Length: 265
Ligand SMILES: [Fe+2]
Ligand SMILES: [Fe+2]
Image (tube, rainbow, N blue to C red; front, side, top):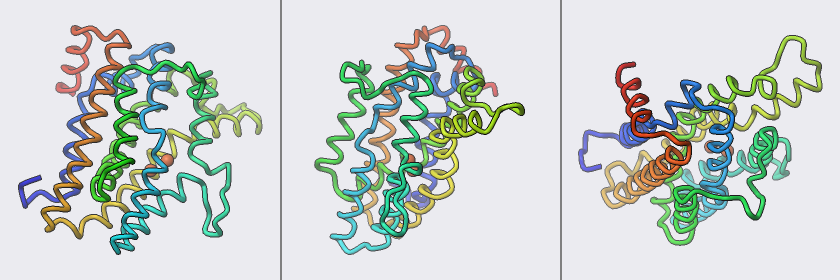
């Protein structure tokens, strides 16, 4: 981000949109063009791209505290509390834990992403390994930039995923007028992982983290690292989507159709 007129917010939003807006996989999700098998493949691979996410947030919070930026540490701590389902009293509530939401979503789709022989596509594996490297050795600003990018890109992708999920599996995820209390509870629990991330990442996690990082906009060294974190996420997410497009059997003609449709929309 060399242009001083570009704010951090503008940069993240523009860079994330560049990855997501015309991506064939995201567009196919949004347009309900995947079949059941393809959606399950997407959901299963997506479940494994950043399994160290909470550790990364906690590590970034500790690093922010160590350098004396308590506002950044507080934003990251609040994010980690949300992820873990930890209340102000320090007690973890299992029903608010995001990992439990994810497992409920995957279980509903009959996916066991934690099976030892669970097959990962190369792009998925590369994404997951890159996140482990980020956790192992990145600066606080690079970790924070990566987290900022994720909190913005997740709602863009999940908003699209919800379209296909509800189209393909209404009986599992969509509450019907004649559903009894038990069915409503089950479907609400299954919906929560995607639905909640669209709302809370966009309205809380992204603006809170952005608010804690904007004060570095005139600090060239910090901004170089923050933007490197943003670029890191976009690079790996793009690779992940490309691998998925191949595995989903999108041939070039189909990719052109999806891309054309996006441009014409
Ligand atoms: Fe989350
Ligand atoms: Fe989040």
